[in-house]
Length: 560
Image 1 (cartoon, rainbow, N blue to C red):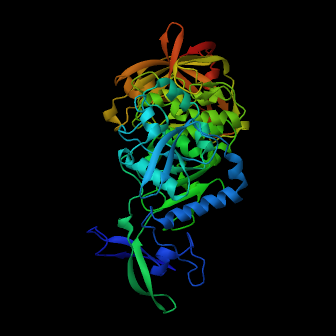
Image 2 (image 1 turned 120 degrees about the vertical axis):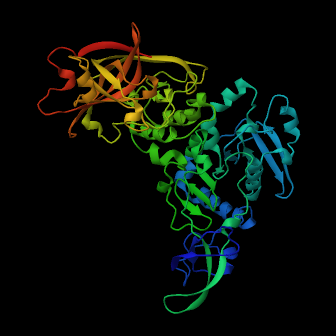
Image 3 (image 1 turned 90 degrees about the vertical axis):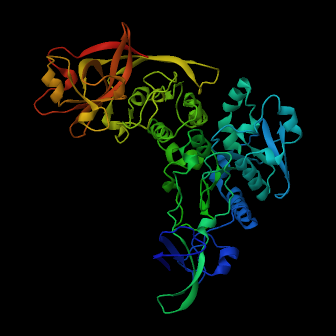
């Protein structure tokens, strides 16, 4: 039985306000010695939960994780088949004891089990491998010089009985561009080959660590009476909402592919450690209910099961939607930050060319993205062509995501699409690109309203260019809705001539007839994407791209 009630505790809680606590029917002895995890199933404790584990760096914690890893490795067929045999070029050798660890950098080891670390750098790390330090680090890396998060990862490695650890700051030569490019191109192999990944989810930087004692969740012992009038002792601990997908790690762009490419993950949160693999999930105490991977909202997805199981292009659309919600310290890393996942995707889906974050298969649909209106902007330096989702910084979605493939027709024709890579890595940065399409087009005018008239978001209305009048734009055209990507790029109260391009038509959907792109002319022979268009089916009016005046034209258009 679990009772939730408000309490005004004194010690050990430090908050001066009332805290909601959860009453866990269990004995204090089980807090330290019970082998049951999650919901207790022994007689008399059918609906009880393990109290929070206050010491994530204890032998008990490491033994639990070691047992889960062993069960997964020996019993889970899907996990064994997903993990590959691979050994990174460099690994940290962690020996000695937890009390007195010894670390050095090793090269070209035989294939064996190793641990990877997924973490937030935060600010620059003092201990990182450079060309000058390489030989010294091969002999020894003083443990006290490592950042706290790396120290904790080494402690976990020793705690579960393993010897090798991969950390990007130390296993990649940070001031050698060629080495960085080579190792980044192998990231999908590094994480798929790892025995498991330590995800330092609660650490905002490499200096924070994640094995701190969880003193804020220290339970207190109290007397209680159950429904059947039995007096017993119970433990009271602060209420916990469960796994937090907004932990610092899950806001960082690079870590998205790291957790999605791993076979097994041990995620260290503020109150609990969650272990998950392709077949199972465990919590080391305090979970209100059995943990389900589906509840992680894309934060943890071993083997990319959640999104990878969908068909292309829907699978890639979901991946980009989740990835785009995260931030990058270096905004030019937008494409490299998902390059490893893209490379792995190319091995599991029927796709070929990868063009600035978009596959040639389903190319036109993936150019038809939308961006959330809040805090969207363009990166300070060139990242991708305007038709790529990577050309903006903001949360990406796709208007066609909820439609069945049978309900979508694409009259637009892709004539050509190319990008210029900045290196030999085809999933990395680009320096330019274009797409050439043949499509029906129609001119429109977008009227940028003063943002003060409608609140915080600069907004506007669109009307067909034909028979253009001021009143037409101010009232808007009921047949079209023009969503401009970044309205602040134009001054308020201004008429902006644009071009609507038909990309796909929609069948069997109330009132919506088609989706398209909104382009702005850049020079005499090229355009850039500035938004997207919805065309509505309005009773009594012909389809917007089928006008009798001949204003909708088939054209070959170059978009950069």
